[in-house]
Image (cartoon, rainbow, N blue to C red):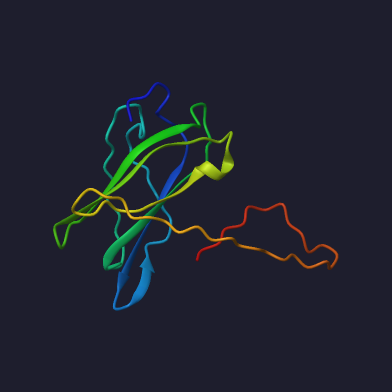
Length: 146
């Protein structure tokens, strides 16, 4: 993105999620880091991720740890090319990942279809019951995957 303050020095990971033979497959979080100064305002950064075949791309999950002097980051989009099949998917974002709003540091992006329409995420209410046993609570960062 070319917005003022759009670049970041934070650590960023990408998890590519696809579907193959009726099963959901993902790469797991892949740190996006090169020898260059990545994620600067208005720049386009390219990374090579070596992974098992995840099949048809369904979504990508982008995570920033919000660290560094420029912890906030405005992500325009993610482009993923399957170099074997020669297929490219575009995952628009156009949002801030901002450590002042920790929930914004994790983005699930859906691909645009042939007409440029973005897939729709459903909203789920997730209720978590923590036991009342002594020491059962945590202050750790907890992740869930549906």
